[in-house]
Image 1 (cartoon, rainbow, N blue to C red):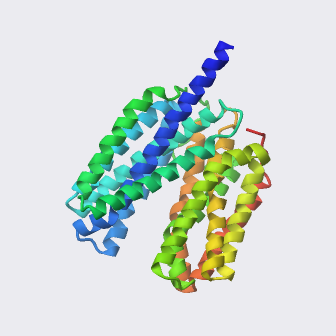
Image 2: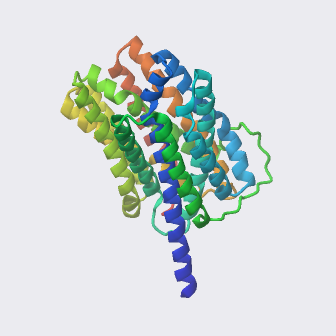
Length: 387
């Protein structure tokens, strides 16, 4: 009995500690994002120059993702998470001190690499902790990341209105998050990597058994980032709404996504993972179809809410399923799946822009509706058990 109580207490401790690391990731990233306009002005960058330098972050993320998978196969995800968080938080303090485009590009490349180390390792930790619980808990971690994102944006807005320089703002948040890292790291789960006899190259595709998971993540992350980049523009140019209304459309999408993540674990206990993934595909398809067919504020806004709920739980639940694969290292599995997923995150939003330029934004949003169809189709072939 005492052993069961001790185990439950440890599981709760691990859960709280990893929740803090998800908060660190979300707050750090949104803090940087909130000061992009200020740094653009500080370095006198035009839109083309800013767009080019911002590419350094996802390039750093993508290039280091396979390397992170190898590291997670050789070392504890706990140790990788510590180093990733420390480097992530230190580099967060640097963009405000950049005095040239090349300095900023180098900082962002390293920031993307560190963010990748932190995110993959903390998701691997989350999968380990999920195995300690009979009920689903994994979507709540991602909900905490979203709350941290809102918090970082709010603090950023306050700093801008108070005319606080990006260098001081980023440095303050960096020191705060370093403190959180050092306090909560000892409370995280000390896992051991699963050593596989199968040797794979650093850059390799997921196994066939994981390919469906990868494609589901691709479709979901493509939709999610397209909504980040294009939802406000869609409301302005297609729905012909005012700028405040367009901003509100993005906010309700984000609120729906965050709410869905906090509700996801309870839904898993009620209807199961497979049904949630299936319904998520339908929500994406229905929501974006509604916005495409009826480009008016109310139906398009409802469509964005559906899309927010649709993308909310897909990635964490796929990670949870993939983490149950036998004889595989959880961190390496997540890295392989995330590599494909982030291709959708990075490639599809620009594709939406090209299609919009050639035809219209309404037609380009149909790409996202097709992503919903892809999720529905891939989920049918997945075998699941209750968490």
